[in-house]
Image 1 (spheres, rainbow, N blue to C red):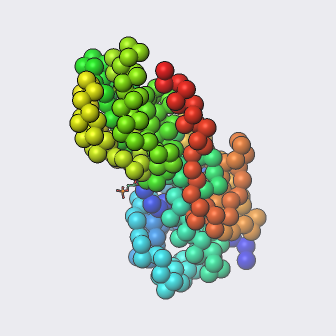
Image 2 (cartoon, helix red, strand yellow):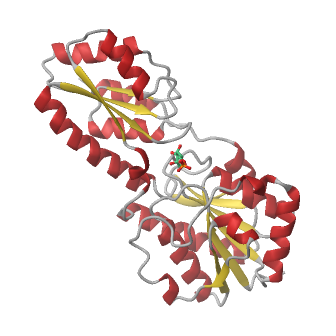
Length: 323
Ligand code: F6P
């Protein structure tokens, strides 16, 4: 069956650049003569038939906006077969014959379920965590990193003025990518990520050594997925009486917001166009991804079940540079 009308949704946690992807999908599809339907509030909105037609002007002025104009919702009930079957019936009933799902690994699992029921789907990775398997980078990662680095630069000003050590906890769920990259580009003395064990004693040694080398401050970046979280780490370090005052900053949801960076807008455009082109060629059950600079198709089965881990070569690099 040839595709004449597509639906587009954003699911999971919002990520800067999702709007740029919605715009790219919509305009690429309209340009190929397809009808486009926006689905509000992800899979939950789909079940409630919160669906409306999108024209080229409807996606005007959203490129530079953070968040997602389609809104998003986490919807665990979509794991049930009966719910998935009803979703397919709703889509077909609305004359939609393919779906572009923009989000993280959970979104890919939801889309894959529809593909398994014979409904054509294409995925676009968007998650600040950069944990989606099969793509070097997801939409939103670059903007989040810029936000984190800007915050750490500011904290460093205070840290060096007061001879404090700052423990900065950032998001990433079970994946240490954001913390690792942020640590390298903000010059952290120590980085704690789930993929590489480090103890409070290791952190103390790094802080002590920074002190001995004449540093007036220390920055410790902690991924929220690390076995030792920021507050627990502070407690242990305070008890060691190292001569530094430790302060904790948990960056939280500020990392998810903001206008998408140039990189995120461009990758969103590339992913969006490629997703539509692949659907038109009869593709389904895959996610577009970036591999060594090229846009590739990744089986959703892998994108939804495996987790991308950061390259630990970067961990070695971070240690080398924290001198
Ligand atoms: O997946 C994005 C993310 O921001 C994670 O880094 C974090 O663990 C989670 O979502 C927070 O989810 P919520 O916004 O539902 O609290």
